[in-house]
Amino acid sequence: MTQAAWIIDQLILQGVTTFCIAPGSRSIPLALAAAEHPKAEIVTHFDERGLGFYALGFGKGSGKPAAVIVTSGTAVANLLPATMEAFHSHTPLILLTADRPHELRDCGANQTADQTKIFTGAVQWQQDLSPHLNEKAMRSITAQAVFQSRQGPVHLNCPFQEPLYTPVISFSKGEPVQFSFPKLVSAPFRHSARRGVILLGPLQDPLPVLALAKRLQWPVFADLLSQARRTPSPEQITHFDFLLPLWKQEKPDLILHFGGRFIAKNIASWESGAPLIHVSPYSTLQDPERRLTTRILSDIDSFCERFEAQTDPHWLQSWQSANEQVHTTLITHFASPFTESHAIKDLPADRPIFFGNSMPIRHADRFFFPDHCPQIFANRGLSGIDGNIATAAGIAHALQSPLIAFLGDQTTLHDLNSLALLKKHQILLIISNNFGGGIFDHLPIAKSPHLNTICAAAHDWTFEEAAKMFKIPYLRLTTLNQPCILPFLGICEILSDRVANKEASDLLLRSVSKDHSLAT
Ligand SMILES: Cc1ncc(C[n+]2csc(CCOP(=O)(O)OP(=O)(O)O)c2C)c(N)n1
Image (cartoon, rainbow, N blue to C red; front, top):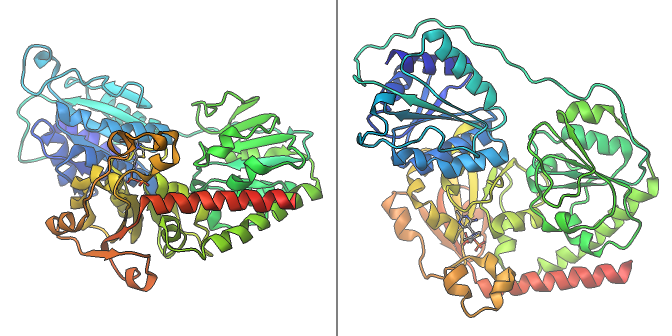
């Protein structure tokens, strides 16, 4: 209990105040210390998998880690999916897993497995603590864990000896340990390019990059998760995803990539032929196509301030006018009958939105351009369809704000347990039910007679009864009716047809391609 109190108190001194707790016995010292600490905030959930995603969502929403407390055994393994997503999206997260002490390991004790390095490959840092560590060491390791968690998840495996419960806990007065990140680019960085393109991937703060684009008058291709849509600027070529496969005009002479991987696949397949520089504060490589010519490890703003290159006034204009053409084609497209992409284009933009993986995030990347774009979230580190409801709930918690979560039906089915987390927050969960995985209609497997069984997992379920079980208000719609959903909190299910969605999408691609090739 004393050791647990040191860990919890040091976490709080380091600014980690949210503790996500699942029930268990070996974890009682940690859970109790958190419950008793006057500055700790507690969230509880019965399912460790959902709990891990909730903490992940909290990290995405706040930029700060939440600490997850679970018992030993399979409970620990249930944290793996959320930890993997956190690792690949550089989301802060701290895992505190209770364990048997060393003398009870590997000798048949109940609920005891080798869990010390279970997250290897998915954590930034890990430590197996010992019941014999003194206060100084325990506090120092805990502080180090918080520091490491700025770049991704960390794991502290915490063995506890019995007794696991004492009625009185005292928190000794400890000191926080200070850590800081250096800014790495300190001298001017000059390049001779004049027709540069800026790729703005998922990023916490796009403003330094947008300022650089304005200074150089270079076009910016901004991913939905770059948050750049919140600050519209003439340099942003909003429909780059449609344009790249059709671009026949002058080629760029440099590509600068900031942040993570793009949702739009056309970025990866664009054969621009230009040198590619990636700037990121993370040491992990972001280059699946193996095209990088320069890799710069730096915080974004210090690089942007020091980067110098040329400007060509016609370069940006040619992208802008092509973008205008695509925009005109899209207006015609959305005059057609209602499909899933209409629902996303027309979403209320009055609160943050979490988009589920699969088609929702792709439609949003292409079509969601409201006048005032809210903060956008998704699990794109590994693009899992698991834990999406829990992640959205964790984000709503971090932001202390109402939130929309827009998910596909399989994504919702995968995380039904987490409906239990919904009612603590002001969430409008919109389920786009096309009765299976609509994404597979866009892949070559769509031609196979096995599409519906092995990939799309077609079904005929709706979510009314699930809503009832968790006592969540429920609404069913066939089009996205804004006045109807604006004041509504709960589950809103929109039914759509996979075939119609796919046909509309094909028609749009043909129109863009035809209109653009006529004009260039
Ligand atoms: C945990 C996990 N399992 C499987 C997949 C593969 N997968 C990607 S999208 C998808 C279907 C999602 O269907 P749905 O949520 O209904 O959305 P839609 O495709 O209809 O937009 C699947 C199974 C995944 N990304 N993550």
